[in-house]
Length: 310
Image (tube, helix red, strand yellow):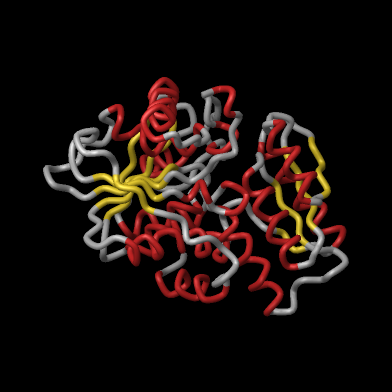
């Protein structure tokens, strides 16, 4: 469980190491009501995850848990690996990243360019996760979870606290969900100020299924956004914060995601990955319909994509 206090501590810890990403108002007449985009895809490594990675590594360093020789290890379909590789390089420690075979080539190339050791194998994230846990046990490396650690989620939540500083009167924040770290952090950050709507692909409904079951459960994962929203189970932190703060859950189809991504490119020249476009797809498809005058912010959380597919 995390709260706004954890997010504020993370913001202090990572101050000066992350970018203040812009908030863009949508063009008049293109949405049902007031709409803004939080352009977090412009963050270091093209994803919000740099925030949590920096917070996790710095917190472990403060507690004396980080050993320079072993460094950090992460299991990731790409984005968390990129973030932790970047954060480790920025802080002067080695990073090893385990990724599934399905990880996009563009992300694997970036990992190697940053200087991380990359181990690729297995059909999905769960296989990479098991290998990374074993590596941490064998080497003493600090394990950085892709989404389900307090420092990771709190660091991601600085997107939400930053947003509240940038824009007055936010009513609703739409955020894509894979494992739930970003959703948890943002929900904790804006608790008492705005509601959060969690958007997931129909082909990977981790939070939606957990809310229906009353606990995190495994789900089958597939679909066009599986490279970034392909966690098999929502994290314990994400589920707990979602229940505590009353996060709403909606689902979108792959076709909705593709259409929303194309619209972001055609109308705004914003090149985002499918997982990031999922949040906008909720509005674009009508899966979420704001009340008249409701002030809505869509978090566009990642840009690690192949522009040739736009």
